Image (cartoon, rainbow, N blue to C red):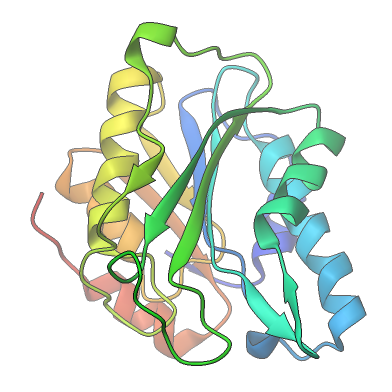
Amino acid sequence: MHVGDGLAFLARGPLPADHAVVTSLPDVSEVSLEFEAWRTWFTEAAEASCAAVSDEAVAVFFQSDVVRDGRWVDKGALVHVAAERAGAHLLFHQIVCRAPAGTALRSGRPGYSHLLAYSRALRLDARSREPDVLPRLGKMTWARAMGTEVCSAVCRFLLRETACRVVVDPFCGVGTMLAAANAHGMAALGVELSPKRAALARKLELKP
């Protein structure tokens, strides 16, 4: 667990072949940037995440759309543009239900999130097709976290379909994805700008 800037960490160079990046990039409300500057930062961070992993490894993103001035900002689309810049292709795009289908959440919060996986060289066997919809988010360890069921699903995918056995989250928050990786027998490396959240991440444990 490192206290520091995730984008600076990714800029250090490529990760080993058995490392996967799994992260949820911060929303504009979490950074000290104006909206357009955040969009630029967000796409650069997504591109850097895809570029950091080796050709056969994967970068996985969990992102929830937001409303800005009465218009939706599709974070999945932003990630996809960034991944293409890094030469990565889409392995799967899953919709994660944040609430039961047909349930309206409060204004500005969608009832779904995007779960997207990218790689430059890895191909998935069509017979091992990933589900299009994950019906449950799972427990939230904090307001901005990836749900625990989502984290477990990502771990199972990595173990089943890739050679990645180390999970790297360069924007890890309180470390839900890292704790899930450890619970599934994988190593984990996290970077978090907030010392308080980094301290919580060091202590978080989850059951597989």
